[in-house]
Length: 237
Picture 1 (spheres, one colour):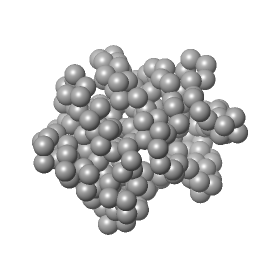
Picture 2 (cartoon, helix red, strand yellow):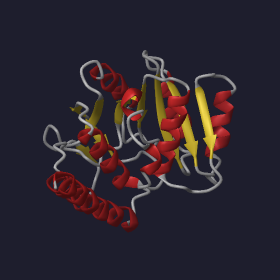
Picture 3 (tube, one colour):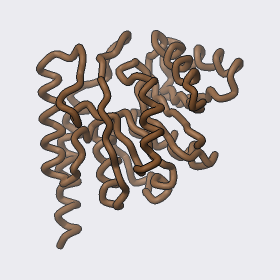
């Protein structure tokens, strides 16, 4: 199976070299695509240095900060054009353990998409303040109830998806960002009838750099869930 790991970046110079080394060191030998939004800290320069030594390291540079959702859509299209069998979404900050990528891919044998889930086996989050943990947990509960999608971690940004599933989605219609993007992708896959599995992971707050979470991302997800819930209701009429 040809696997592409997609990693959106903005100001991840402190993490990017290490994350590339760990992903490329996996025995499944995945390609890695960094999609950088013109990071002023020189993230792209570091990636270019590593590309010179490894043909499976790739980079797309974008002219400005354009958001996580559009970065993943760009990566999905790049993977489809090059006939990869599966893509993996992951963060650059080591909140997702690269060693878990192998488990995600192995579980694609029986599933169409596999989510690295913080909530499928209790709560598996390290170093988050209780306020953020409660926000995340209840946001997922709210999203499950309103959308009808029976996934415990609807906002997870760590997953593997078969590209055959992505080909069935209208990627140009997905314009959301952040948590809203993850919910929308899961919603579309679920109601297309694909088999989505969750495997437990331990999520650890970033090792270095600043979190990208802000109130705008939270509110976008809130309204996206309502829109998807309305879409679900209208589909039944």
